[in-house]
Every structure is written in structure tokens, then in C-alpha cells.
Image (cartoon, rainbow, N blue to C red):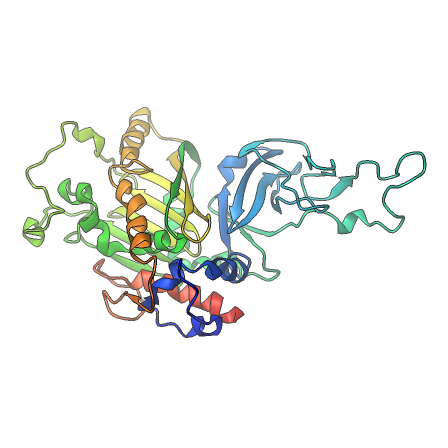
Length: 412
């Protein structure tokens, strides 16, 4: 593994179109990112409210490398608590999901309520008048750390910052509108996946913003005319340049000549069961596919009628985990539900499209193991970060690095 070759104070000066490979492979970058991004002035996506629908329901997850519990307290309010006992630091909750009336540490049985308040210390009065906590022990100062929480269209965000921006400003108006348009109605969970990938987390977040690769890497997309660069579409960038929407619009006729000689077009192949990708009209606009990426770790997809939110969790410098939650509308007809289930075969760890995204990051990770001073060239569509009515661009990837250096550079 290479050593970190870029001084922290220089990260704020990075050019967003030239990114050192060392940022994906240096061990030192993990601690810096935890402090400056995941515990910095950001909103980190931690789940969707459908996962914790009633008081006492919870899920466990991570904000960077910090374990957290996302739950509904007894009043129905959403809480995000650091999953760490205030006594010795032990993990409190090990289950991925469940229901409980309190949180209890397995080590010394300190008990907390669903708001993180310390309610009971085992043998607090000692035994036979000896031992126990001192008279000045303050229960109120020994609770769990409770994070700031914001929700938008059912999505739950948490922040370590004492003064994070309001969530609407953080997302930006265009991203707000698109999230609300896609999942801002009564929804239901129709499936979940968890996927481990052997690459740095930033490589996957780059991938979700890289519209340039969609019809080159994904042969299925191009061959069966689901997403091609000869279709109308573009890239919308949020006001702060941190977030993006890549979108594709329907088209009446495809231009196969645009892909002449390209290996990603297998024009003589047909589906034995065309209902696998048969779509129904769902929105009052021509968008048939979109990927929304919110810094640092949220992805929302619309691939035909396959709707999902994805949460990315770093697992060290060269590994990450992706948590998928597939969604349907509560008022879907049986036929519409079946269409969503069939189209879900496109995504997930073994998806007909997403399969390639799950491995391409590892190809890069292997290629940059000893990067030296070499850099990635991210110049498709120019060098700036701006919305564009084309998807032959890396403007949103540059937007990711704009957010990265804004956070990392500010802390240097």
C-alpha cells in the first residue's frame, strides 16, 4: 500500500479535473475523511423512515467508521444515536434491525432510553454500602451522543455538526424536486440487498455520477435500448455543486450508427422475455432513467420503474459496503408491482446492469495500488462543474471532488 503523498493542507487546492490516485489507496486518508467529511459539516444518509415505521423500531448502520443506531423513540420522533456505551465504549446494539424499549450495554449493563438518556447504572449504590458511583455522578452528562437529524421525502440524514445547513439548502432546489418527484409519496419496501465491494468508497460515488460510462460498460443498457448516449438527457448540478442528477429521456428512434463498431452494442440479440424490461408510465415528464447522487453517500435510482435508494458505507481504505432498499408505491396495482420486481433484476449485486459497477471499482483499485504521483484525468465535458444538457461529461464527478476538497480543505 502506498504512503499518503499529499499534504492535508494541499487538498483544498486540488484541481477537480486531476485527482491523485493516492487519495483512493492511502491509509491516512480514512482518518482524515472521517473527521472532515463524515463528522464534518455534512448531512450523511442513514436510512429511510419506512425501515423504522413504529416507536421502538431501530436499525444499526454506520456514518463513515462510526457505528450508529437509527430509531423511533416512544414519541415517534426519529433519533440517531452513536452506538457506543458512554461507560467503556462497547457497541450496544448488534442486530441490523429490530424493536426494543431500551438500549442496554452487554458489558456492565448500563441502560439507556430511546432518546439516549442514561437511566440505570448497575450497582450504582454499590453493595453493602461500599462502591458504586460517586455522589457527583451526573446521569445527564453520561448519555449516548445524539446527532442532528433531518428528513426529506422519507430519507433520514444525520450530522455530527452542531450547526449543519438546513437540508433543503444542502440538497439544492433541483435535487429536492427530483427526490420528491420520485419517492415523495406513500411508498413501500419491496426488497433489500447488501453488497461488499473491494474498492475505496470514493470510486463507487464517482461511478454513480459518471454518465459517460453507462452505455459503454453496461452492454445490457445499450443492446436493449434502455440507456444510450444518443437519447436525450443531461446532468443537473445543485447550487452548491455537491450533488447531481443524471437523467435520460425517452426517444422514439435510436441511432445505431452512433455505436457503430462499439462492443457495447450487440444489435442481433433479443430478449426471450421482453416483459423483463417492459415499463409503465409513472411520471409526468419524459425521464425514463435517472441517478441522483448526494454527497457523501446517498444514491437514488430510477431505472425504468425500478426505484431504490442506496447507502454507501466505507469499510476501510480499499473496501466499502452498499445497502440497497428497493421501493414501490403503496397504490401500485399487482401488475405494476410485478413490473418493478422484474425490472429489479437489472440492479443489485448480480444485476444485469449493476453487476459491472460492482467490479469496475476493484479493477481501478488493483490498477492504482502503487500510484506514485499519477492522477486521474476527469475532463470529459470540460474542467468546470455545471449543469449540461449532455451526458457525455464528467461534470458531476468533478462536483464530487469539489465537495470533497471543500470539506477536507476547510479542516486543514
